[in-house]
Image (tube, rainbow, N blue to C red; front, top):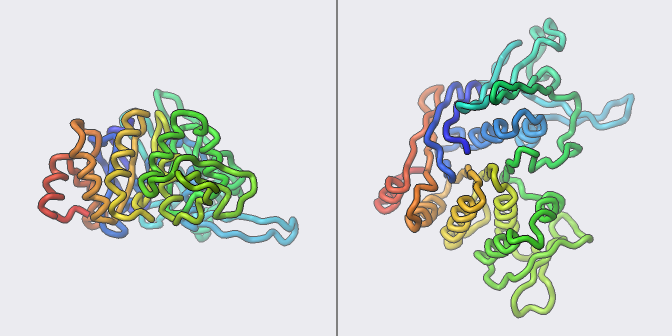
Length: 348
């Protein structure tokens, strides 16, 4: 589990440090305060140098362009790696560092690819192979580089890598991504936890199944108590798909890390306390560290309620604040958060 984190030269973070991280961390702050960037930094570190993680971030952010090679008649992808660097400023040798006391992931603008050309060109168009990814732990270092025109869709397990970290962004999971997770959940005790999560929004849910014939919004069916025919998930509203993605990802991240951007998306306020109770209990039982963001006071208040019902210190709230070029973290323990919630003190 990550207990401390240092981020240097990544997006909004010139140099950011935080320690005392909890098993479940809810991150709040104003717009453009670095909430999503903090999740990305954890994703890059826990990816242990796997290039698919940085490629996925670039694609999620739209920091790439697609074109068609006029000669080869195939799609090409050009990544805009300049934007991952602080203030969008780079030069040959620029480096991003994301580290704990025991491991470090570095992203280095290399001089291996025509350094003279890199120094003179528009660095927004630096070829991906100029970015080297170096990961160090226990004195051992591995290195990869991004490849020209590499498409995240052809990489294995875009949402889940071998490092056992899953990133649930604001973009909805598709059928294929959910079905990959479900392959390792079905007919195991974890399946009941996912059904329990769906029951937060629809108490009549008893079963969930994936079928071979699907569209972008169907192919997942639910068995409801008292209902003879199965009901397509797509007819149950966006909140059901969102909580399915969160629950399936949570149980699949056993022994690893779950990152959820805007965790309350699609969920009504009355369901949030039960959602948080499920997240806290499952994270503790399956040894999952959770980082989630929100803008919602209802989500914060529900998090505080769920924490107050427990007799441990499993969770905390982290508020990110911008001070000039720096981002600082203000941490609220369970007791501080409970007091703030009771007195309606603004912590978002």
